[in-house]
Amino acid sequence: MNPMKSHYQTTIDKPVIFVGVGLHSGEVAIMKLKPTTNTRGIVFRRMDIAPKRREILARWYNVSDTTLSTTLTNDSGISVATVEHLMAALYGCGIDNVIVEIDGPEVPILDGSAKDFVINIEQAGIRFLQKERSVILLQRKVEVQDGDKLATFSPCLSQKFSADLSFPGTAIGQQSFTFDRSRSDFKKQIANARTFGFAEQIEQLKAAGLAQGGTLKNAILVDKQQIINKEKLRFDTEFARHKVLDAMGDLALSGYPIVAEYSSYKSGHDLNHKLLSKLMHNQRNWRLITYTEYADLVGPHYAPSAEIDEKENIPDKIHKKAG
Ligand SMILES: [Zn+2]
Image (cartoon, rainbow, N blue to C red; front, side, top):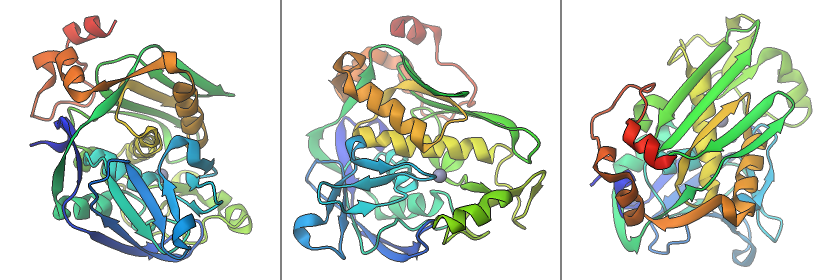
């Protein structure tokens, strides 16, 4: 069964271990993903902290910092940083519940993408649980703006993510990418898009205690029109795809798949968090429905197994239903 289209919640079938440096802290952490039958969602456990204080639920209301990455903090003040790529990998693989044991303050950055998370999660396999999955169905448009930056949820019966970027005068330039989670392959299209940074900001970031673990092995470094890495870009639109990856991870902090179209212009973790908070704070913005209700709503048009063109629109009938 396709875990993304499962009516039942999932966990991984076997534990998976990752070891690596944190992008911002520069600290090495051992991180173990463990199966769980408890359907609380994604739960981090700081293994270097006393048991009573170590648990951090991966939810939007625990977001404490969004400077260049997303940090979660529990009521005891215990944090875990840079959760977004792991959250995106779990969401992209259709994993609802997992325990993430970690012995340090930051999720390993690995190669700057979600590629290794996805490969290892797939190898671990997926276990279906005896509890039905629910989804958030968007009821009306929700938007946040910060200067010329914009992030929006629009009603749609799919789970779509679009990112538009504009860095004029750099190797990034203007680029955009749209991904439909229900119809396209997360592993092929999004998971291996790496994070990126600008050479001119490196000194400033390091002085501010950020990017301490950053190297050309875990980030694309852009120096005006040049890309410093020897490795070629993995896609022409790798930057926009990475923004989609980040958004999927940040929005997975709702705790449910969100049935809506997310679109952003120059967005980042901060705006993603503001958008999700605005959505969740007003109960009139959304409705929690079971996956069975969702499947009934979209009907047979919404079960294509083959990958389709990323830019292709969903059928008119579904648009009409959504409107
Ligand atoms: Zn990222």
